[in-house]
Every structure is written in structure tokens, then in C-alpha cells.
Amino acid sequence: MRSLTRSVLACSCLAAALAISACAADDAESTGDAAAGQESAPPDPTREEVTEPHPRLVVAFDDNTAVLDPGSGEVLASFPADGPKRLTAIGDGRHVALVDADAGTTQFLDAGAWSSAHGDHFHHYVAEPTLRTPAVEGDRPVHVVSNAGRTAVFHDDSGTAEVFDDDGLLIDSVATTTIDSGAPHHGVVVPLADGALVTIPGTDALPVGVARVDDDGTRTAQFDDCPGLHGEIVVADTAVFGCETGIMLVSGDSASSLPNPDESGERVGGFVAGADSTVVGDYAADSLAVVDVAARTFDVVDAAADVAAYTTGPHGDILALGTDGALRRIDPTTGGIDATVKVLEPFELPEGHGGVKPSLAVAGHRAFVADPETSTLTPVDLETFTSGEPIALQGAPSDLVATGTAP
Image (cartoon, rainbow, N blue to C red):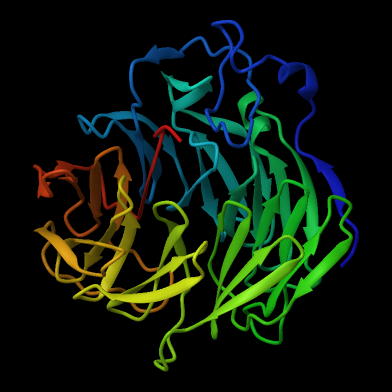
């Protein structure tokens, strides 16, 4: 592991700009991630305080990325693009990474909705969406991971990641630290409060484990018992990784494993957060994994159809979109399907990775299904589990995320 190197994307008086307290004067603004303790940015003249969260939907198309009001379907802003972007919500609850692997760029979109912690409650804000000035450059960016108030963009073709503090996005200036894994591979870096977890290259494209490095780049621990590592999430102080043999849990300078619960040869390749210490991952074509990190349990639930997209609802229920066109709500505790609603006509999944398919996101107490076949966005009320009138989009959506919900 080579030592970390420092590169500055833009010069600014970062310390002075970030010195304003999040709970100070009315003209201070914050990203609203209380857990990360984010500081505030200079006042935004378009900012308006509102009485409750106003989530935003970000939709990727071939020629632009649009920000929508999920209530009305109105396009609040649109930003030109040379090809569709892969979207990843940043941990500050406000920004979205726009990843273009072929062009080697990762841009950052401020969706213009966030919440700021103030004592025992939150203040909620909206502003005009904007494309932030900084962009991270590198050879084939794929995985973008946020944790502990920092974000890492991993570049497969160089095996390096650029890591920066999320606060810098608020002043259009980020200083990045380069973490070098040692060799090109399809890897990832998980930022920590005092360093990072960086994947260890193997002989194949996927890594074989992770190493813990401190802020100086010194390797302090190594966990190399996770062949075919893919998929990551952080729960409290534990990082969770998918392996060919099961799940690897890393906390501090120690690691443990949860073996796959059957002999099917399947594995988890991605995760979303559930309620409390639960995470949900993909597992086989028609099933999902439920991992309770605190209890150290790993179960598999039947999704009743091949899964095209999945996430969790506001109460921790699993939402799974099947290729039969139905959205199902699954109880993560019992594994039972307690509600089903038809949202699309049956469809087939594209071959391989990277093909365009329907996508799913949750904003508040509604789920939204973006359909590239009909260029529509269908809302589903998660309290009644009924679908609403599809919203016509300007083109075929290739990706969808929601942001702006209070932490």
C-alpha cells in the first residue's frame, strides 16, 4: 500500500467558509446529517425554510439529468448530459453523484432539499437545484460510497479512490485524498472517521478482502477472507461486505463472517439499509437476503418473482419490484409478503450488467417506479399500497434516486 497523496480540485478558504455553526444565525445552512456533524455553508439566496421534508427525485436520461418534485411530477431543473449517468445518493442527504464510467468523471448534483438538526428537532429547507462545480476525474469510476461525512469515488482502471469531505460540496470546492489499492480491479473504498477500508486486489476482477488504513495511508489491519467481494454498507460502527462464501463484518481492527445460509452457490452483491441494524441484499434471481448486523443473523426470503429492483420503506419493510410487473412488500422478520400492487406490464431483465431496466426509489411515504419502456414514473402510496396515475417523463429513464428526506 503506497502512502496517500493529496490533490486539490479547487482552491478556496475552506476553513473560514465552514466556520458558521449549523444552529447559528438564520442565514446559515446545513446539509442536515446530524450524525456526521456536518458544518454549515455560506447562505444560499434561493433557500426557503419549510415545515416538513420536501424530498426530491433525481432521474437520469440519455441527454440530461432532471430533478423532479415527487408530489406533482414537475421538473424543477434539468442538466444536460452526454449519455446517461449512474446515480448514487451522497450521505449528506442532499447531493447525488452523477457517475460516467466511460468518460471518467463524477459530478455532484445538489437536489435542493435537506434537513438540518437543531437540538431535538429538524429544520427543513428547499432551494433551487444546482450542479456543483467540483468534479472528480479518474479511470472508470464505478462505486461511490459515503460514510462518516466523507465520500470515496473508486476508479476501477487505476485501483485508486478519491476521498473528500462532503462539506466541501457546499462551497463548490473539495480537496481530495488519493487512496491506492495497489492494482486495478473492481473495488471500493469505504471512508471511516479515522481512515478507510480499501479492497485488496486478487487475481480476478473482484477483490479478496479489505485492508484498514489510517489517515496517513498506513495499513493497520487486513481481512482477506472475502473472495469475490462486491457490495458494501455501514451499520453503526460495522462495515458489511458481500463475499462468494457469505457476509464479512468489519468493526474496528477485527472481522467476522456469516456463511451463506444454503448450498445454492448464490451470494449477496449489494445492500440497502433497513430498520435498526438490518440490511437487505440481493440473493439469487427471485430471493433477497436479510442480515441483522447486531444479532449476526443471515436469512433468505422469497420474493415470488425475479427481482428487478429492491429497497426498503420508511418502516423497514422490503419493497421488491418483480419482472412480472408487481411491487411487493415483504416483512423482513417473517419473510412473508403482506401486500402486492401491479405497477408495470411484465418485462425481461437485460443481459449482463449495465443494461437499462425499471428502477425504484422511496421518497417519504411513497415509492416510485421509473419505467424505460413507457417513459413513466408510477407512484405507490406505501400506507395503502395502491398505485397512482403514472407521471409522463420526457424520455426513457435509466436510473432513479430520491433525496431530501430527514435523517
